Image (cartoon, rainbow, N blue to C red; front, side, top):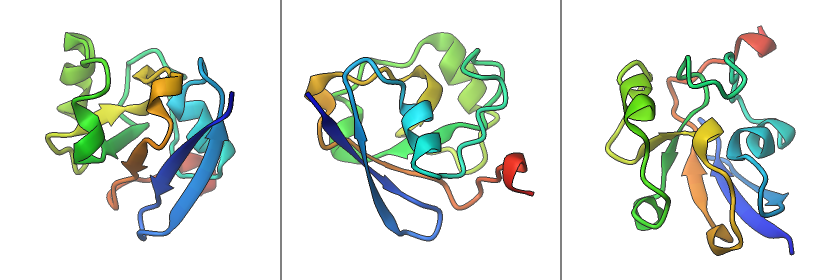
Length: 111
């Protein structure tokens, strides 16, 4: 069963990506060509995969662990609905999830 994730890039362009339950949001975003660096490769040692979850989706996701909350303190442009995309494992219930890439994001892989 394929699910659709909607990303808004730093310029506000909408990019729809297909994913499967069990996929990781960071890897789905990277595969879609978004500037999600993911320097630590999902080890929660950086904040380069920071996304802003749409307000209507934020409370529907599993809560962030304390370690994730600590890393978000270092994220550029962090907001109340910020999450690390590497920590979001997709489920069928997340079909239609919308996240934004902050304008402050940079991806050293693209420099």
